[in-house]
Image (tube, rainbow, N blue to C red; front, side):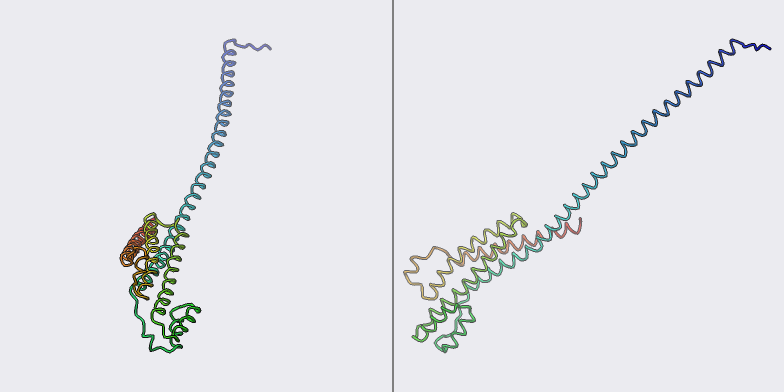
Length: 253
């Protein structure tokens, strides 16, 4: 039995099969290529996402650190400004007392024991008390007592200025330039007035003798005190303003 194959039909069938195979192959190639591209793209996307996450975490950390540092800085200002002002005003009020407070009892009516108790209460050094007790026995007392009492007060006020100035040095990096300038001006005036008051005490205690007038520096203690007090009020106003701004920024951040 013989099989007759139509050449035309065979050719068409072969062509169709070939086209189908080519189409299938092309489809497979496209699929494989797309798969490879997708895989590479997905890997790049994942890599980018990871890098982005790292950057975001880093920025988040930087922001948190900046916020933390800012809060520490603001809290430090709230801590150091009132303390600085308190130390300054202690020195200022002490200066005012040095200038104005010259009330003394009538030592002629004191016994030696009463005098010693008075001097101890005023903070006069023990060796000075012994000297004054000896002078009391010799009937020479008023001028020496006034001088030693006021000088004991002078040393306390001078120490107050030193403490305020030393504290200022430790916190200078936390305070504004305005407060720095005002504080430095106050401490400069404070140094001048303390030197002036040492001479005032000598003159007021022993009398402004001609030899004292000739050698004392040309300072006016009361004018210097006006400068100091004015500076202290400027410091107070600037401190209040800066702290109120910091509180406002904190409440609106």
